Amino acid sequence: MRTANKDIELVTSRVPSAFITRFLAQGARWWVLIIVSPWITPSWSATHTLEGVLDRVREQAVPTYVITRPPVEGDEYHARAVAQFRSTPSVELRFNRGLHAKVLLAEGPDRALGLLGSANLTLNGMEGVEVGVLMHSRGIGEVLIRDLIDFCTWDLRRSSELIKSREQRSRTE
Image (cartoon, rainbow, N blue to C red; front, side):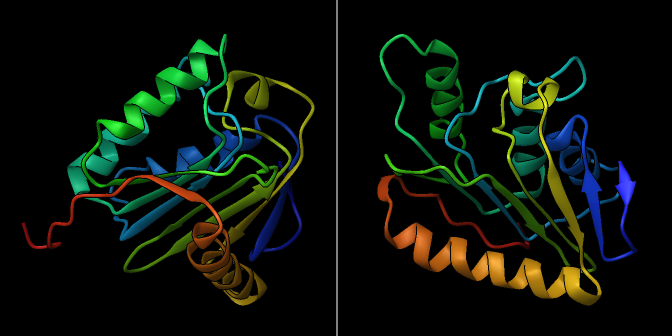
């Protein structure tokens, strides 16, 4: 990882891991998680899996918005990831056949985090030659995260087909 400044960082190896590690960090609390990736697989490395992320989502009842492509015949890994999202109550799942964007966003009471890059949320995306910009909730990073949250939750979400609504629970439950 190459540090540009304290607001944003250029990530050039294991790109999704930069976000996932911070999302799963002990003590991190989250209000919302947004996953935008054309292709998603259940396992990304020995230490980072979709189930690990969804465990955190379930523990904190994090409203989670997932926009991905619909599974295609023969892609059992993506189909398994989609099935995991379908079985998680706080996940809203949407399909967008033309999706190419790769964005991960999380916002909590004392921080926000974003990753915009070239890597799908797959094992190949973790190990391949990829690049991303990791944004933190300060300075220009905060501005970019807010703009990406608005784009993903309004424009991109509205242009994507709703597959599964999330079950709503209060944060106090």
